[in-house]
Image 1 (cartoon, protein in one colour):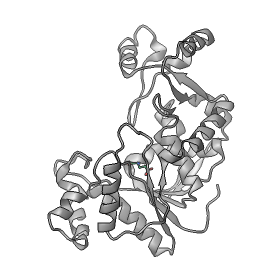
Image 2: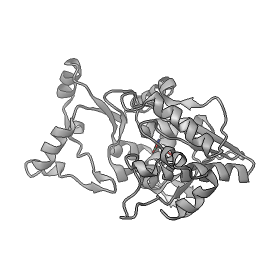
Image 3: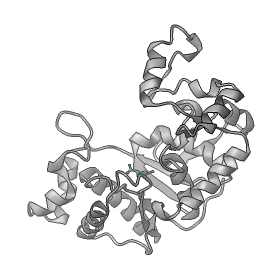
Length: 290
Ligand code: GLU
């Protein structure tokens, strides 16, 4: 594990909706941590999903963060401009024999799961983020797989977790600022998708590649991504990428206890600034949601 001396943090929103108070909290934690340690704060635009991400939302992100009085390094890295970096990383894993094409649609995964009495080994396991992919396409014969590829059936690429773990020098660890040394349980999310059907990467792959390229020393993000970090640690090991320190912060919650989402328009940063609240008042507002 290598960690640079220089403190570099990042805020990495997806321009697929408006930022809300929870994003403001996360961005500020990253910014304040960098500034307290004489480090750098980076803004990264995570826009690999070209169908869902919009330029208008990106513009709004810049406006919101300026209103929050944050300053970031330039140029800003947009993931959509770096697909080649992710392709290269994907190829490395493929060359190691760790990927398999997955032709499943959501519908046929559901059907297989419902029918799991027919094939008990496909009985789904429940992971921390829902059902774990039951490995349907991992079990295809070479001929079946080649036939589907020849027909041009759209496919994602999944990691073969069993193979990856047999190759990795486990156990792997990372340092979590709040929880201390963490032993990674990379299989916790199952055979994760590393390249989606419609673009040559996924959140998980791009984020570890970028954190390495941008020399991020501390990844400060919501605790909803704690399980992702278990898997990211394995990707870093397989791809020989640096492992940053992590801090998984609390998520802001609505009055009913559910976590804030991009669709809650009342807590978007835009609506807050349009209501006349001043950025200095934000900390008190945030406290009400913690
Ligand atoms: N782009 C992710 C999001 O908007 C954040 C990813 C991360 O911080 O690792 O939720």
